[in-house]
View: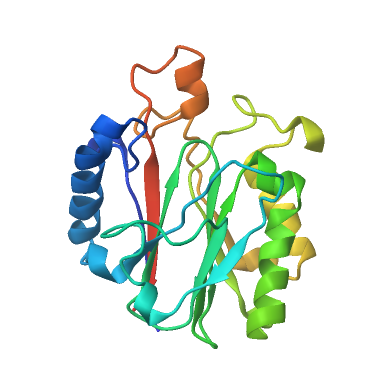
Length: 222
């Protein structure tokens, strides 16, 4: 089974509307980015992360009927990670500074896209993501492969709760503690706060970026 993973850049435009008047442009950017990788918005679901409440480890397993959710119609779910169990169903996650984790079981044919930011990692979201897959889908963690997206590095976004480690470093620690083999984890070398090809919300707030926006990752089993 083939796995497609793609990551947008600033050149693709912001993948999330931060103001109501940006909705149409963001929708165009998303559709063009997906189409450029042979994916239709109608076969894609949005991982819609909301910073409300105190639970940042909310996980949902989708059905085929959920294709298009959040892309061609309003979102039905708030989730920090989503899981699909059939090929042809893409998962789309906008990012500001955080890690997007693509977690794949090529044997069982299961795909998860998990948002791992400060809030999630402080609740051990890396570990909990894998525990969800074990409990709900009976995966063997040693079979899983993981790709971690570009994210802000520790020089720009240190995690104080983890001795100033980076988002990538803490995510890897948590995934390994959940049983992922270190050799099965691929970490992007791109620091999205240092590389202006990627949006960074934290750098925008510091006045170091002219535009606030979101890049995105998409993953699909084919």
